[in-house]
Amino acid sequence: MEAGRARSNPAFSRLARSGIAARAVIYVLLAFMTADIAVTHHSPSSPSGTGALSEVAKQPAGRPLIALMAVGLLGYAAWRLAQALSGGKGPASVLQRAGWASIGGLYLTLCWRAAELAVNPGPVAGGGASQHPQPLVAAVLRWPGGPGWVGLGGAALAVGGVALLVWGCVHDYSKALDTHRLGGAKYQVARATGIAGEAVRGALVALVAVYLLEAAVKDDPSQAKSLGGALYSFDRLTGATALLLLATAGLVCFAIYSVFEVKYRQL
Image (cartoon, rainbow, N blue to C red; front, side, top):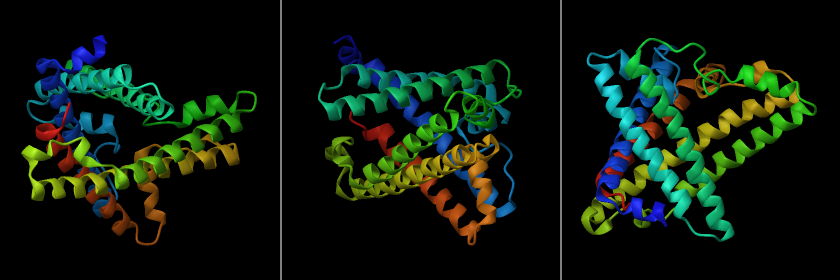
């Protein structure tokens, strides 16, 4: 009940929208870094949420900007967690609430990273498991039945990626966006960018899952890759540049869709 009242608060709504704007900035930077890999086979930072934040922190006036992004990311995390706490109770609703809670946790982590960079824009040792998953995977592989646990995690991630791809294609965006203010033509643009963005995001999650499953099958933590490592691995594939540019286009689309959400999202 308290979570539901918080969601209806205008100040909470403004904070959530600032978080969606911060998300748009992150995806623009992810797109830039992915395009850089396609063209130069190199990126200034690892293509990830924390890598994108690091790039912001390096820019002139980066520290105050990253501090604002930390506030926005906190707002976005709070909104998703409020959704998780105030959702329905049916089986489908429970799964949806679990997804919202996971997203809230992810953005709390990004908020913490942004706050670290606002205080000290230098690199943080280690970069976190999301950027260097091999140590975590190595630790799990040493557990009794370790490869099975890693495989289970990879399978769950793969299912999540495929579900995100399918959801992006079949989702009714009119339930998320205020179509009365948006108008027919702009709604179609928003819907198209949402579909393309969610499809690419789901495909990238599934790609990371493939490497995690490979680590489980081979009992070799070096096979596990972060998003950045997975994108760099495209160099071994035929048509690598085209695939990376396709991923870039999808990430740009999701950033554009996020801009639509900033103004027209029904919170």
